[in-house]
Image 1: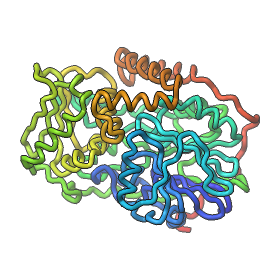
Image 2: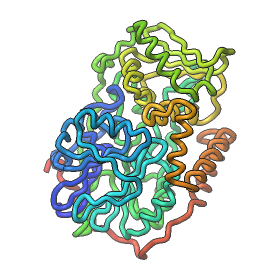
Image 3: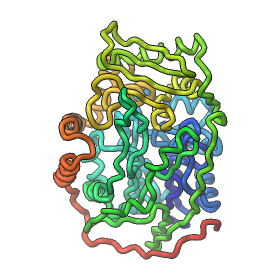
Image 4: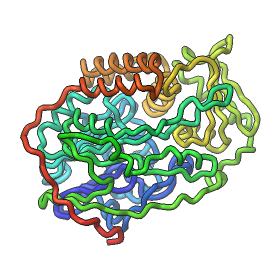
Length: 473
């Protein structure tokens, strides 16, 4: 391809300028989340070769379906482009492993070739957005990011382009669902309600002309997480309820030639689900923690000062043996229990990747006391442990103040407005309840009130659709 881009895998874009130039979040092989996830679709040889030939690799964030350690080993000669996240953990540790790392200046266009440049935005949730200008056509790679104060500025950039393709996480939301109350009832599971309308409103709000399903092409393979396959998102479900006068939904896997204004679909084969025993990933549910490992777990949770203000205790149950981390002196009314195999737990607290256990859906979470409605681990557990703590390296109250102040300084009033909006939405969800008609109606009003961007030019662009590209070419 002379100039253009293609999409493949889970959340991978390959940009071309005469040669393959940039690949994003290349998960090309191997499992993720302690072996729980595998790719849902094969990577055709043509796209695999193009990805591996790219001299630039952009990594959005530290989740292993985006930062795949096994895949990155094939990019030792490439330059890794990273968001400017506070804490700088990913950049520092990849540099220590011998990779060539470049941190992209926030909200600044950076040329990669004569006709391709990128614009990166990092946010306090340790996610990031990448705009890719491919010869005047814009790729909007939101991957797993949601607006954390960058929305208004991003819309202004998008409005400069006639032709823009939005790619973002969408689907039923099957991560961290294995959460229960004390009676053993599941307290959070996706309802599998149609979400196409929400995607359309999001694309319209940003000013995108086309939407490509993205970042939800995985399946579960561990025998202790196979149950979660019921809640994954078939690619074709993205079209259900998607209606828009300004944005068109495209297939998930496409190859777009900018110079010819020609879009081809890529039709990779679906990969079968092959159940794998947890022992293949170092997990034995009967193993107990060693005394030194108990101390390691205790120290891990105690370093998060915020947890002391919202929890009385954290309990881990490993190999049938319980260990309690007392966050207060009591009484112990509110707490959380994790039933988890020894191998993954020790790895998670050692390498500070606790979110991988939650997303993997094989660790059982039990809540004690009152946690409210909706996704109960938000906003007081998962963000403070996995986002601001593990990745942002902000554990104490002072470190958290400095951390949020840094992002507030970057985004100014937009950050403040976002925080007020997020708090209002959280409180309303506590009142309305999750996945209720009232909540759904409120979401529709929310997207209706979002400011629509001003278009630089007028008519909608019709793409020439070509037959599917051979998967093995």
